Length: 97
View 1 (cartoon, rainbow, N blue to C red):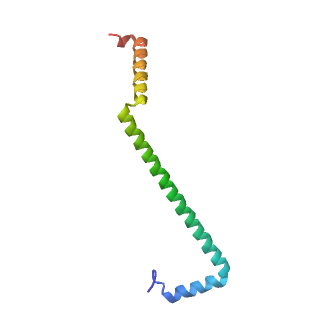
View 2: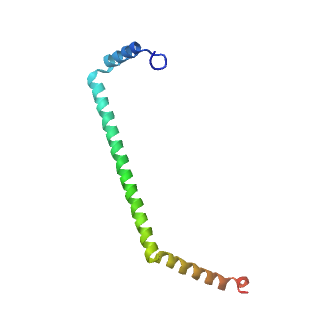
View 3: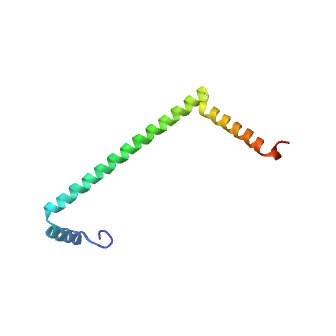
């Protein structure tokens, strides 16, 4: 018994019929096209992994530098938040208690 109740001899007969129908040249071209597709997919995946690992390394480096030097972005956000609170307090008489 082979795959799901199909014996080796049945697979050989099916393969023979496929070769007779399509010919070896067309099957060879299909195989080459599939191989090229797999190579392209593998290359794209490896480039994507390299790009994402570079991005993670850059992000980690930026976070490390920001924590060592103090983050000017956070300081600006804090200043913006404080300015918004002051504006809101001026506009809302209930908060001015």
